[in-house]
Image (spheres, rainbow, N blue to C red):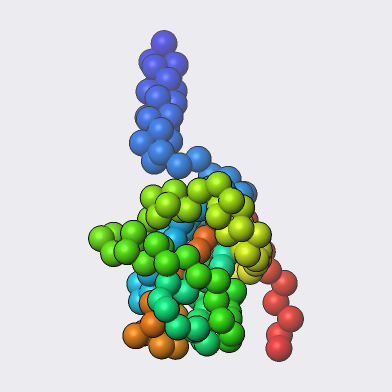
Length: 198
């Protein structure tokens, strides 16, 4: 009877530790959202966030996709803006670094009411900016889908947080510009990358 009790006690201890950790090990982790947001320049905006548990030291392969665009909210044509996209693992940029998307070097579409609606929090949903009906369909058609891949080598054992974020760079800060994001997705996969020796 005593060996059985010892075995059961060890089993309950193991199960308790597994539940306490709260993150089952998995080869994949992902999230997808339809954000439909407008945001202002000069700040990083978090778009997606997932956690993944590494059962052993391996590499992470991260794929991000998002629909993005740019709007000009002032009275004069704008000439230079771009959205920068990055994936971070535990707060550090994944390789190869920042990816640039939806860049424009000519006049942008104008939705004047998108400027004041983001002044409090730095971002707002399209509908909070009065973009509805025909305008919303026009805005959706102006977006472009981009996919980028990021890699982190030799990620240690344990739970890691992966964040997808974007930043609006404006070449002329005096002329207000707004970034636009529609649907976003983030997928992380545990892999073992082939080392070529180069």
